[in-house]
Image (cartoon, rainbow, N blue to C red; front, top):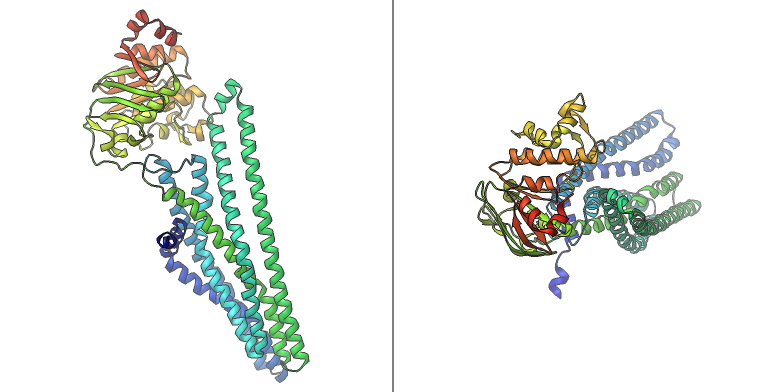
Length: 566
């Protein structure tokens, strides 16, 4: 039990890392912001001294020195704040970007870590809002220290006038912070719950956007929107709860600070009335009582921001500290090798077994769409080898012995719903700009009409998710990208479902021609693609039940004929 108690929580470790990496910027920011707060505190002290000495002596020289002193104080306030915040905000922005990159790297490689069922929308929220709020700790600590400097300077100055005034500030500050520290814990827990609910709502939105067309197709959009409404309503209610707690915190802090300022002013007035402090000291005390509200407000808000940063860091730890699903091997597949699936059981797959020789064009006709999706997940390494039974070999090497990078460099699996990115046709087809088969890929995918349709050709601007392209154009663009990669092994999943029959026939012939001599697997029910393949494997109820050419299967297998004939 003692060991568990002493073990640092992942969120705390993330915050310590952020602080350690920015220690130089934080020291510089703390010095400058401390100078700012000290100069701000010096302003009412200087006014008190002017009243105490200059007005009594009525000397122009003393007045000039006083005005010069005030000018120095004002200049120090302005410059120290400007440069201090510049240093801190630059460090804050840089650190937030670092965490965004780390979270995104984990989210983009789901096979590398077990992210505890988090969806892409939730990971996006963690990589943006939580990364920003975690990095805020870099500003919180220097501002906390600088506010403490202002309170200490004010307490010392008031103590020089009368010890009771200084003690009143110290005792009042400790009391305020004690009350607000208790309230900040509620803010931390409420904020963490709100962030989780907002993330779930974001994930639901991402799912709806991806599946909007199919939902409209079978009339499921109303049920889906109702599901989102429930999730978003939960997030809204939690946001209201957090706002209510924050409001109570801010109101309490303001009220307590005002009470302390009033107590200092009234006490100073009483002491002046009793003749125990001078008029100049009274002016200083009243000025400090008014000024001290700002650093006290900042000082009292810091525990809230610390708890919010801690809550965000804990959510980032869900991704960054997730255990590896599998440890990638160091091997690389042999170039141009074959693909072997041996007894794989995953999802609806019930011991799938087949081999595709190097250079062969094989089509797989799935009778159940779910089985096709499960097979694609295995081949794309979206399901790690420990997540399924059986073995997949690529170029004679088991996937478990290969790194994910090596697998994807050697074998490209192009899903039916591949993303289209904002940019141009060219950058979508050849993101790296290094493809040697770009023009051949454009022709093979029948994307030539889209290129010819626009005067910019391949440089035609494409919106995010291909919003300015039709469904068939997006699908052909995705296919062109897969063909332009020119990998040793290419797996295509339903590459022509959104194109017409004539175009589909041409694409099937073009794929067979362009990929001649390269290993190609097409998972489809398209007669054109099935006919273009060297042989067809029938995937039914999670196993391979038949194997032959498309035309032989049509002639001798009635079930196959009913499944694929159009």
